[in-house]
Length: 547
Ligand code: FRU
Image 1 (tube, rainbow, N blue to C red):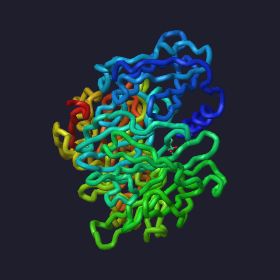
Image 2 (image 1 turned 60 degrees about the vertical axis):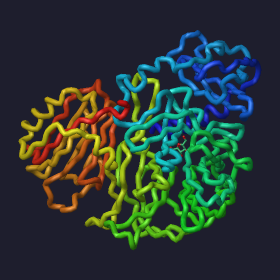
Image 3 (image 1 turned 90 degrees about the horizontal axis):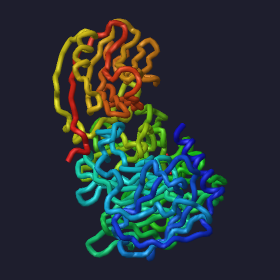
Image 4 (image 1 turned 120 degrees about the vertical axis):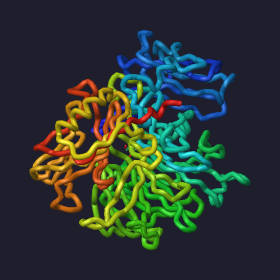
């Protein structure tokens, strides 16, 4: 829903009403942050920000024309200190003088401590985020680029925000990595490390990090672009001959996007969503791409990767998915994906636009998804779900994808207690003692049903676990346990301030939901038809933002 809304919004904003003609204001960059005030009472206006040495940057903002900012957003201008920038804005627009420079982000001390700030999920300091982009490991850092509107808590101004982590748990936010330019805004994509310098962008002893993204032209279709970095993703230089792929006419659509690039033997592969499915392109130098095949049945945010089946490295199978996380399993020969089965679903709920890491040091297949959760009352929006490790397992239904939190994440959980063979009431008494569910909590439970009906765990008026054995349904999706006669279900539930994530039966299925702490009871409670809790383990987790 939110996704559709976001694209409609984009279409509206790119066409009409917002040409930046008229007045100009020149300002000296005196301090680290350019501070941009926001008021949602006012319509969006288009500005042009000209920074010497860089291309003019279009920016769409809600300037408080009554002088009253609801909150402040920012751009880190450290790299441009002392320069004079020029802002072009529509004639007669009031409030431009509220854009100033400050050594600190306004209300900086409150960031990461706000009431609805997730404590175990990545969020950005200010503004909107959606898809994870450019997931790549390099030189001790896991890079997380992401779709970001730095200037408002709603979708607009798509840029690549940037954060890095050494352990997939704690993240450091860095300045915006890729900004919109005269070609358009910067939609989703991926990044690789060009160790063999096939692109020629690298320097001696310094391979280039090469990012691929979609240029949303706002009227002339979606084209693919690239940019490279020689400073570990801190700054990017756009390729002078962008776009590298323009297939709008061929596909007779504006929907050609989200390039996912990875190495295959001696060549490079790009999976690109084009109209009705995922296309494969190949390249020897990352600059010139040739279309080679197409698999129909997917929408947005492709990924394609090999995984051993049951740990057997000798005969991997390939997984291809689209934005919803529904996937096919098949073979891939470097040019063509041949599906063997599908589509299957490994996760439900708020998960969207999952991407896996390139170049992990230990070969693990690590994924991060966008969690489409709101954060009411806050000046940021959207979050990333817990990073997970993926594997393929032979199940009674065939080979299936398994997804569970990475070991690094599981390791931060601190045991509170462990119980066995509890009645529903006994388990609920124990849960009631974990009163402060504003702090991160993990509840691992093995539930046993006494009738083939239902078992659940409720929190804030929603069923975090919602098992209906009669309907063979788990959290609204078809789910049949490995032993179809089983009366048991295991669940590993992570409770954060604005969301919950539940991993079932060792990761065979997972579900993420929005949580509203103002609704119903903040004490989790088991329920169902006289269920027992055969095992209960409770953990607390430190905030990932704690230093
Ligand atoms: C998926 C998506 C992508 C697109 C991006 C724009 O959420 O629609 O297909 O590149 O978001 O922000």
